[in-house]
Image (cartoon, rainbow, N blue to C red; front, top):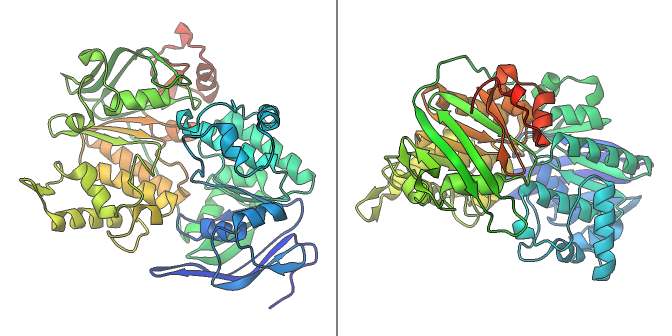
Length: 512
């Protein structure tokens, strides 16, 4: 084996990891120097997260060697990695929901609680990621939980910081604040390994990139000298699919919110205030907004997890459905499809197979039952069709949901809902943590539904995504919903102002 460059803080040589059905990493070499921000690119399932877990001590390699600051060693656990000065922000959060922010952080940082509370407030405020250390994690939005992961790492003052999709649920303003933080850390000598599917971010932040495909290193590049298209071609080995939204007249009213006001069960939640919205068949309406402004409460109201005081507060296909639960709303007559923002736990049961996860929502609409009996052959056939149509990287329909990469599980969940042919589709954060090729596949699937006459409501913090696929866009801010404006009449500046809660009447080109 070649000797690592003397300046490298971390060198990987011939790192391999095999599982019964897949080779996750195949003889990977990688070097990162002090103060370098180094991107690791690849499609979902390319082996990026497995490689990062090996560096952080979560997973042990089957072959190869790790050289840390000139010493060969085996990183046997995350605690050993932290002692060496390695921190990691996971794509799937590693937080205990029944503990507070401070208690979660204290599990990896040995400091008195009072001192830790002050540090959390100070560091989170300084880096533009404000947190209340006394707040219980189960009450946090996905974006707020991401802040906990990032702040926990920053408090450890790492010499190598691994970030796996750190901006997936952050606002554009928070992303810029984070980038300023990362550049400052790099300037102080911290090495940063950065995984993201957002190619604009990679080109703006990183000075070197290693590209993985099928578990192998397929190339290296200076992202600053590349375009989004050229980086995408390196990742997927071909051209990126196009995404086109052709104008069409909307159809009948399918989903209506009528002056919906709703208090939150969570003392730290956001109450919804007089929310009204109409979504017609054959259109995609997007809701933008900063995480924690009522998205969780709105999604609970839409799905039926939170029943409303007034049945007519929410209507599906003309039926007052506010008092109906999730199963009734999914029933054939109303045909609601729903994709929550949390994949594991709400979108899918981690310990269950893909086939059984398909059964959970498709039992009646996909003909998986005959009387009280489950038709296992139909369940398996349906799951196989989702895997094939949405290019889910999984051994077969018996694979456990938790064994898939985040992006592949997202493709399966969205594919499952799409193939149930709903009349109304509600999707939260559709491309969170999904690679560029898969993101376009998902967006095109939503556009195809819209073109077939389905009413599609998308709640996303990705403004570029909303401008790409939506006919109209509204903003949720502090529990209030702005007018829904035609995307052609909107601008990033206008939506950004609305995200602060400033809904001026003169901006209402199109009525909600």
